[in-house]
Length: 275
Image 1: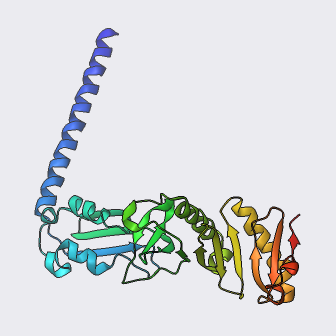
Image 2: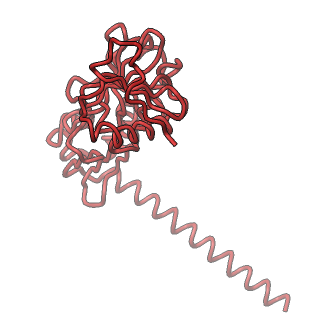
Image 3: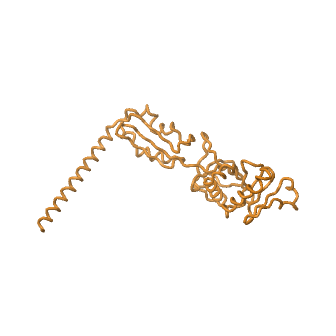
C-alpha cells in the first residue's frame, strides 16, 4: 500500500512538473510572438458612446505614435502597450483604460471617460467640472457637457485640490449627485447660484421663478416637497405664477406670487404644507 501511494505521488509530481514546463514554454513563446508581431491596425473605442468625447480618437492616436499609419508595420513590443495604458490613464478625463494587441495584429484601445455632473464657475471666473465622488475635472474647450451650472460665491478653484474640499463645493457635489439620479430634476434645474450667505438658489429650466434650497440638509425631503408644490400649485395656477419658492422650512413650501413679491404682509401666499 505504501509503495502504491509513493508511486502515485511521484506521478503527480511529474505531471505538475510537466504542466509547469508547458506553461513556461507558452509564456516564452508568447513573449517572443509579442516581440516579432507587427501592428496592422489601431482600433480606439471611447465609452460611453454618446458622441460627447473629452478625450478624442485623434488624441489617443497621437499618443500611440502619430496615428495608424505611423505605427502600422511596427512591432507590438515597440509600442509598449503597458506604458501606453499608463499614459492614457493619467489623462484627467480617463476613468479606466485597456490596451492590448490581439493575435491578428490589431492594437485595441478602450477608454472609459469620467462623467461630469456639474459645471462650476468660481467667483474668480474659472470654469471646471465636478465629477462623481466630488473629483474636479478641467473645463474642456473642445466639448461642453450638458450639465447644471453653478456660480456665485464659490471660492474654490480647480488647482486648490483634486476633490471638493470646502463645504460649499461639497454641498454642490451632493446636489449634483442627487439630481443625476433623478431624471426630472436633472432636466429641470439648469443653474445653481450660491449667494453671499452660502445658501443655494436653484434656477429651473421651465418656469420664471427661483427656488430657495438653502443647504442640502434633508435634500430628498425638500425636493419631494417641491415636486408636491409643482403638482398642487403650479400645475393649476401656471408655471410663471410665482416669483420665488422657498424650501428651507420643514413640512411646508412657501411660494411667493409675483403680484405679492414686494408686499411683506402677503409673502405667505401660496404656502403648501407637506403632510
